[in-house]
Image 1 (cartoon, rainbow, N blue to C red):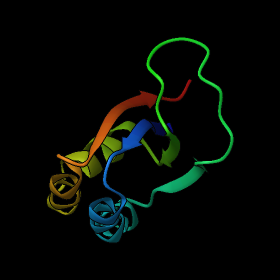
Image 2: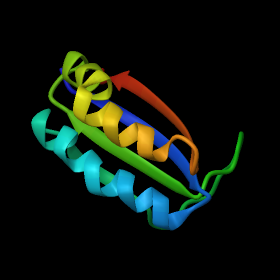
Image 3: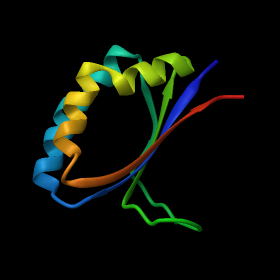
Length: 94
């Protein structure tokens, strides 16, 4: 059953964030991730306002979780840590 990362991000330093963008694709490729939405027009109706919204599909919940905890993603995440605010949830499909 498919699972999804739902991520909301606000970037404070675009140059440093690019380092995250350079590293993260290796983790997504390793776990067969498919981007369904990334950026584009968005309207926040409730809750915190973020600049970017991303929806990533994985084959299953365990793959989505393993991707997040993978060495490759954690290396990318470290580059993002102090230059962006992020909220990431993993949700299993119905």
